[in-house]
Image (cartoon, rainbow, N blue to C red; front, side, top):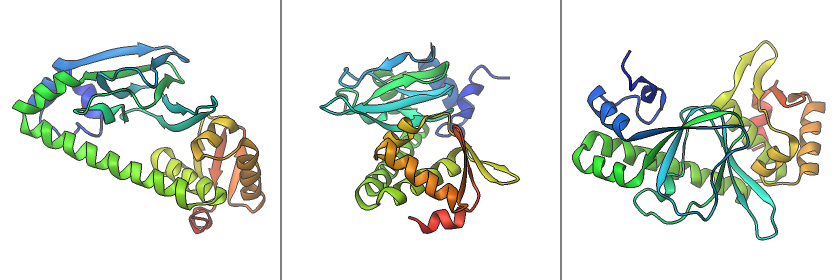
Length: 225
């Protein structure tokens, strides 16, 4: 087993040849964070991009009145803080470990030097940035055009695609999020998300069970978009 095999579990790198993976391994810094630890804070000078090696990381922003908005929960293989790659600047959000986690840290200057001498890695980074840009466009569309029911349905469908587990009753989403966290991700109030989920449960579209949700009728959920 090669010492850089952990990089093959990162979707953005798993198609690279071993030689390129070895080069990335050389500049990789593995850091461990306990649950509740801050990885970086919004507004800090950005110097690196990160990948989740294990655990979960919450990416959030804080409004001028102190309200937290969760952008996304990052899991194994996900990238975050990539917006400061090449451009530099400050971290646009805060990253917090919500489970004991390990992250792969790649410093900007090291990546830039590597890209200059390795075209395969350069193409991988370009594809990575293009995919993330597409995801950002989707998030903007979701927040701007959909009502609270549509937003909730959209987030549940995204979770189903990214981490859903097929079970006898449907698709299990083990969210490990409380109602406030889920409301922050969707961009609506806690009371509204509770009301929307309860209505979906009543109509048999989903089944609620503490921090778990089972999507029982995914087609009806899609119709709510």
